[in-house]
Length: 322
Image 1 (cartoon, rainbow, N blue to C red):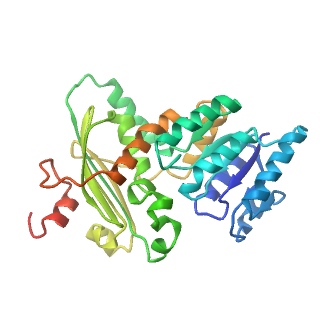
Image 2 (cartoon, helix red, strand yellow):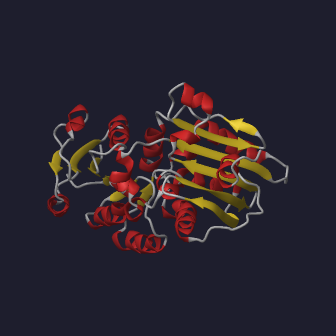
């Protein structure tokens, strides 16, 4: 049985980590969050120590690490806001633990190089949650692509619309300095997936960058990608709005829909299984997507785009056209 600590336990994603830790036969012994609404831990690890101050949490982990009595932390699961990931990963390595971090690993790509140096210095690993890479449908697509003898380029259309209320903009998620903005906060998994399947970008164009929308075109090594991300309810397909649904995700490959809306329930468990077996996703696995979303956050918009436009982008840029 391995000992885990966890940061950001009051957040949205923490229960998936708690469930994965429990289902893999391990335990959480310490948890951190500035908010104390963390009663959920009683359903998993009620004996875990809890801290609202990172300084006291850090001191606690350092103390049990130095005691060297078998109670040290083996893994620190990082579920905190994006801008804190880097600091919490470093904390894990300092106290002799591997880090298992939610997306994005860091906000700025140069921080990955420092983390690699710290891995070597402390002899520990940094792991990333890239759960779409273990989705059964995506694995099937990857196998099909790898075994195909065709050298023709694929035409990809990525659409991810997940409507959010006003709270979003008052939370850390709505602060670009903390979340990295929409491309980083909700897009990084999909960009990682596309580059894992079709290679790194040869060309990158950005047509829309708003607080609630982002869209552009990627020329990957083996595919051309039209993509659109949105937090706006009005961008949902009419059929979804009529059904009261708030999220729409779609990936089309050569005009054929890749259906992967199901099968998300156990993805964190699968990533944890692979990570505990030493087959998880490390720093270099995350690098391409971190570099891409950083560029999207900072690059200039393409004026007078010549590339094929995602239909939602076309509708916004050129209203009234078909």
